[in-house]
Image (cartoon, rainbow, N blue to C red; front, side, top):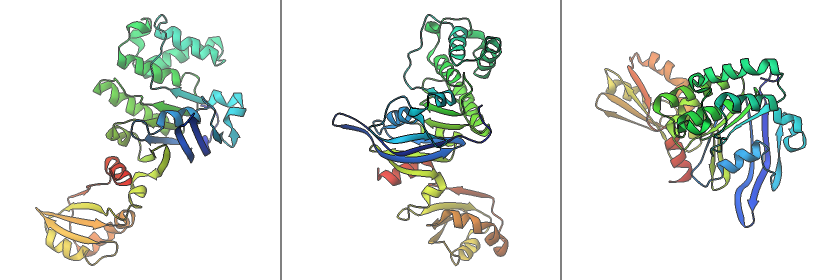
Length: 310
């Protein structure tokens, strides 16, 4: 990976339209280091925004910057960007090894370093046994893994992954999710889209929500959830003495309401972050032992539904 500090990617009022059709409205965002999920319904503009951020298409307005420099104006910056597209157009006459070798050579890597790099990628995505098979004979899941490998071929520090898990079997999905998380832990800036919200939650809690061609929300899921006061967060606490705990919690700050239900205390709060910050001390003060804590609607599906009123 190039550089030591995480890459900082910025979109400054970026928009893209095709004739009368607005694919992306005025979009501003900033990400740097780690995995960020890009979410939105079909037709929301996710793929177009990915292509804008990766410098693959020219914005109709605004600008994309990588570490403060306009991406479209500096060809050298493209060496730092990797792209895993949703569409599949792999050349079927290449073998997996030939395809990755070609891309690495095109990136300017010395010939002596090509084979070790290819071997590393094939092993990372469990394609070693298929390395010398033609891509035309690869399964959908294998082709998806090869697309992930090619995005990493030149060791970029910014990665765009558009629906990278499509067509993978459950085992391959689990392995790919772990690989994507690891890329973020390495300090790379990784933007990943998926229409399956639980998969995104396995990768990251940081999201950008696109709705009707605009950025609707950006940040940590819990922080975004806290900014929707019309839908209080619901927290369930299981304990041996729920009535005593309920009586104590109902008198505390940031608690809107408390109910007892089947050995559980169900709390509603408009400020989940503050509630969770104060909860350990409250439990110590009340002398109650809590066996299990669950937030019932602090997930991507709920946040998406609340923000879009759908």
